[in-house]
Amino acid sequence: MRAVRNTDQGILVAEAEEPEGPGIRLSVASVGVCGTDVGFVAGGVQGFTYGHEFAGTTADGRSCAVEPTVYCGQCGQCRTGHVQRCAAPEHGTLGIFRDGGMCDAVTVSEDMLVPLPSGLDVRDACLVEPAAVAGHGVRSASLEPGERVAVVGGGSIGLLAAATARQRGFDVDVEVRHQQQRVAAERLEAGEVSGVYDVVIDAAGSEEGLARCADLARPGGRIVLMGVYQRTVPVPGIPSLVKELSYVNSIAYSRHDGVRDTEQAAALLAGNPEIAKTVITHRFPLDDAAEAFRVAGDRASGAIKVVLHP
Image 1 (cartoon, rainbow, N blue to C red):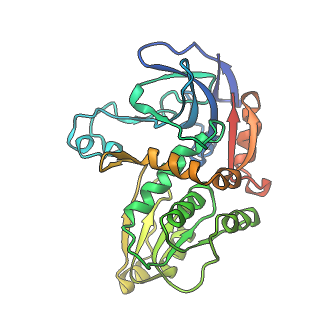
Image 2 (cartoon, one colour):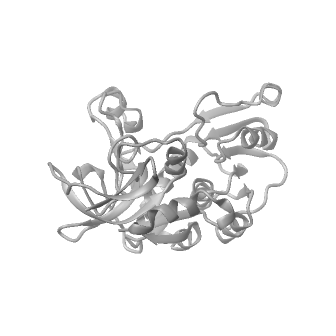
């Protein structure tokens, strides 16, 4: 079968062995190119099949997204629903330093499957994973009725966070860098930033973006860190101190009250088809993976979310 790997020659579609072992075989229908994937390519990360945002169809005809977290289910964190904090050595994520879904087919455990609700096409369901990341971040913000929310960063995570907050009844403004992101934010009923906010979501992952979050937060406000910082988080000292800002870290997705963030993300996307139409800007066949990565890494291309279809 075909699988997308990074090599010394860049992204290639290589021949790989058919998936074996215990679990459910899934024919992959859609897989998103994440900013993490693009960063891995730039950093020369190799040795596994890429792709942690994917969905497909089982042999018995079920359409499912995949929650790619590998966890033990037995440690204290897992038992309280925080599988993203699993303490076991095997903890990790499919497609990140281990084989993922950017291929024709995978075998995954039954508990990784997220059945798709009516109204969510499997070709769009690769958005379930990033929407769950966004949803977990919005929930971590502990929003109270009437609070103002801003998102800094108009990529897929920022837009999905805005869509999640809107679905939960909050007015949301988004600060973006590119015109296609402004258009997308408006389609998702998010406004332009103005004034100060109770909660600011960092979906930019840059020193400049985090400084802007601190500017936009009211005294005593909260900043949710959803951007990825490889080393030190560049928290702006003076505004954070003077305003007594709180910083909330958010990673991946979990369970709460017995409900998976991925299930809520699937329901969000099924309930508002405009989200997928807005966020997914480019689609490529799997064989064109190199071009898909090029487009995903070039914001001037107009890309927000680039999707591959095996």
